[in-house]
Length: 250
Image 1 (cartoon, rainbow, N blue to C red):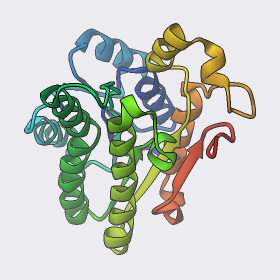
Image 2: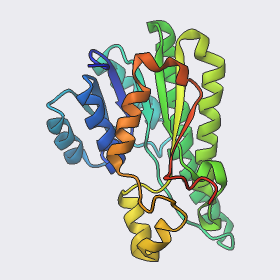
Image 3: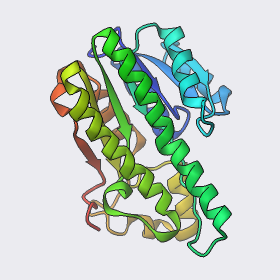
Image 4: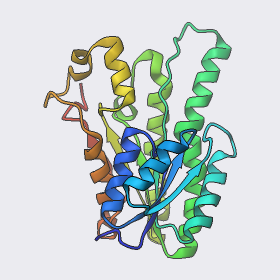
């Protein structure tokens, strides 16, 4: 198995994509540090599903110290970590006409969870990987980070664009140390977020502009993350892998 003996921290692991990532990693032999925010029961059920190949760790990534605390706990449990998957994310909406305090609160929380938590985890990972002979970071970005986003969800798109830039910066600055980074940029994936959009706007609105006429399944993303973490794929360093059914420009 291509990830046998490797330990990987996955943030936001109890959502649909996070679960699929953990399942795919375990199938390739990895031990997984399953991060959860509040739903410990879901994390424990996932750990049981992957045959106990890992650990569950709770942390609130909306706080300034949450990401650092998470890494410290993960390192204490796993010892040597070989990979970090920054998958945790939220999508909030706020109108341009909203009061300034509401506007700033949404943008602040969106960037804290989607980007700054990943920044702090990346810092910790680089220092750990540098001391341990290398490692890999996979950042879950979005199509929205490459083409812009709707006015009421600009914070989400901007945070994902920042994550792509972080990926490229790590790739350029630390690739020579054996520390590589890859971003994955999905379009619509069948998750709770997608179902909430469909409930409000209808499935036709979600599928409009996707040439293949279907959303991605979470398992597709999980498989791609596992592939990107394989030691044999070092030359993916700095890549942004699109998973959007051909809808990048639509």
